[in-house]
Image 1 (tube, rainbow, N blue to C red):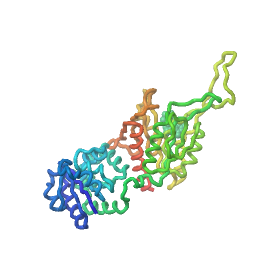
Image 2 (cartoon, helix red, strand yellow):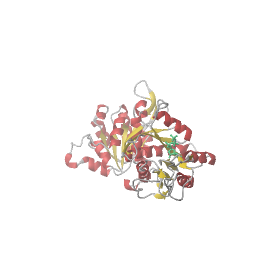
Image 3 (tube, rainbow, N blue to C red):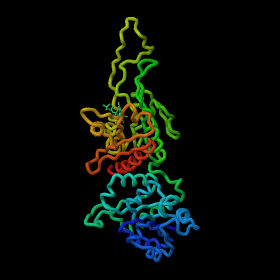
Image 4 (spheres, rainbow, N blue to C red):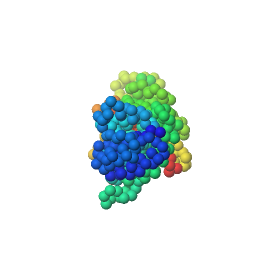
Length: 420
Ligand code: CTP
């Protein structure tokens, strides 16, 4: 088997020499691609002597061989060890500024990163997000070992033992088909229910109480879940855009119809994402005929009554259903403006606690913010947030933000299953 061993610029680079030996002794042909920075730790001579192949860090060496294309295409497996925070960031961003990152973009087979860095760097939200992005693409990112690090510090961040990296790499080749296009997504075999759009509460046959939700964020979430391999049931209230192709579409109009559809879908869903803007109130009566202006000039009075809180109900049903009740992961949304008594984040935290969901996507809203826009900025709140691990902020197009949310959903879903 042809293996590319990428070596990042960390002190643990020397341990990759043992990993290289394990690969070659098992009969593999290994091409080592060190980053420029890693050569300050271990030089080209070591890699060439141990691998028996020429070694370069640059796309400008042996240009006639177009090495990044050749190595990326030919590799049955690419292992990056140590993967520094910088390498994870460059790979997640799809950068191609040296031979290793170029080769990663050309990869056809499985790719495995074995990270090594200081604990703070590993725990940093930027690194967490990069790891999530890579994992959401089907790339294996091992958890680093815990123990003594380079300085006086210790914690999570040690390069996993070469034997463990070797074992994970061999397993990755066993379970992965050759072509990445046929890889099952991380949510393959899972059912994700997404609600989207704004409910409409009829006053009479021509009028309704509605809201500004366009359904764009919900549609983007459904697409991201489809891309992750999930079967998606899409419960759509009023939307300004078409529902995405490939979903099982359930159309609803009112909060009560949405409630019925959600409770019918939840028991066979693994994940429920409540992106719909549900009317909190509905008129207590709906006139069968158009409400007319009155001759005596009196203004009509509309009495509103509370709609049920569908998200909170879904959480209650799961709790009542016991250990294995579904959905394993319930994601709520919060649209907040903040006011004199609390800011947006404080209201978000209160809402997460009140509704009892597992994740809450917090939006700051205003008449020209979020609704109908193509870009957004959200914070993703979880009951596990703490001062040292505050809720991350995701900004970008609704598609990009949806991909980040789904990557986190994948992670939390796995965690939820493992504690059951
Ligand atoms: N939601 C729901 N049922 C409702 C109202 C809201 O399931 N009757 C869900 C929404 O889909 C969203 C979350 O609850 O996932 C929060 O919606 P939001 O309108 O921000 O919160 P409210 O519960 O309406 O609280 P408030 O209006 O008091 O801020």
